[in-house]
Length: 364
Ligand SMILES: [Zn+2]
Image (cartoon, rainbow, N blue to C red):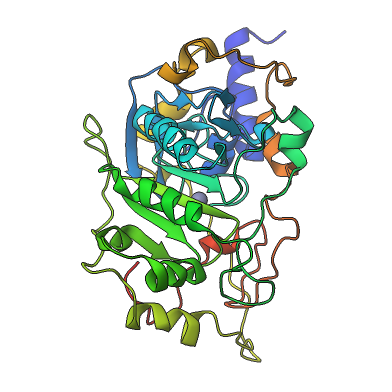
């Protein structure tokens, strides 16, 4: 009989050969999305963002509660309701402002995984707990059950088949919610579809300074994306370069309609691009320790929102422990996933919102 030590060595060798790490461990060449995609709970460490929005991880994450008086978290099976506590706080405050401005509340989409990092599906950013997607669909008057949260579709704010906002659906409350989001000092960027940015450029009166934070990008007409800056206490967090001064209306925005959003035929000999795989050694070194740190119990990790005081939390019929691999099966938020026309990209699990910018592109 093999001794336990030898057995472990043999097991380790077999796993190394098969490319599978022991649970909670990682080797440097391993695909980082496999390591971070299987985490069910945050690392029991103090809250810190490590690295960049699209290449990093998150320690000591806090969870957005599934329900609050002014929000509901969507697609629970994905288990992406985790963020730096400052992000969760911002979302709570934004939801309260939304309510005051005629939205019943917010439907919260993806934040980060429990320990951040690259994801098995969708998003190249959202890795360090400072990004959040919010649906362009106000919270309904009732509490959604688990299956409704999994299956309900977000609604596009664009007129079908055009890159412009549908005036039948657009109203002042959309402007107000984006204004409120931009008004937070912590919020550095809000990504929206160029058609939405154009609507704001054409209609916002008075103070227009906040439009600087509203950045046009692919996708983002079913949801908008709020990005806060690096927080104190995260020395390893790498800031994004500041947005260009000015509202970003006019010429830089025209480029989107005249160049970026124009359908292009792929060149005849164009080879399909390979999806980029981020390995553990491409992330900040500390991310391996974040991945293998012991778990913070869920009860400790959920944000204690002040607005939850006196709110009777409805029972949400969640599975006992969310299966980290379930994200693979969860529905996209769009009723019909969009066909990607340009540029050509083979990995359809990457959302259109995360496609690289064609060159030359104005600054984001
Ligand atoms: Zn996003």
